Image (tube, rainbow, N blue to C red; front, side):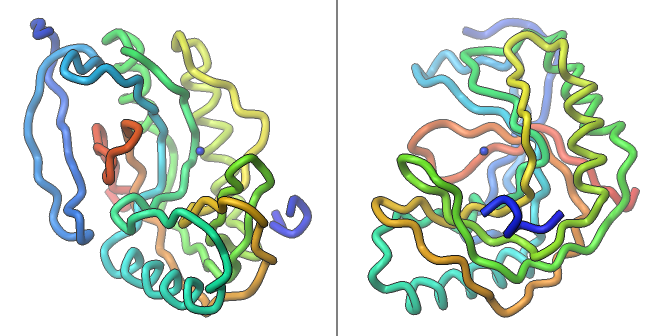
Length: 221
């Protein structure tokens, strides 16, 4: 698909892993927590999404391209995303206050069972979507057909989980900024070859600088 054709109380329940990326994109810290997909210490709702997560080398390359973009788009008024949050959403699930264990189990097994293998994606474009705070992103002139197959599989597998949002469109991209006013013109960037080899279930809270990796799948396994 071509982008230019289209110019995100403690109870006894099973444990799951909670990972928080290192702020500099290094090793992840891991702890085991128990409970529903609910955090009584936070009043915020949270977002869940299944995403392609870059390795450190690719994340660093993205950060380098963004530094160049910030220099070449000095007049762009935008809030720039921290590199620790770089990812490409494969399926946005929605915003929740909590997810019952049965629903979480469906999502967890979906991530682990999706028929997917590593695929190469070349990011060579900087573009944006319309909106009140237009997302600015890195993407490819073309997207691997496998991405749409993953999206369809994931959407079908979780469609009966209560509260899951049903997306109608899918454009693979890595959001790196949110414009505050005028959208930037689309432009080319030095290509980044990303061997997409990891899918993960991510959770994010408003205002936090990193997401949590709840389930991770190495596509090479």
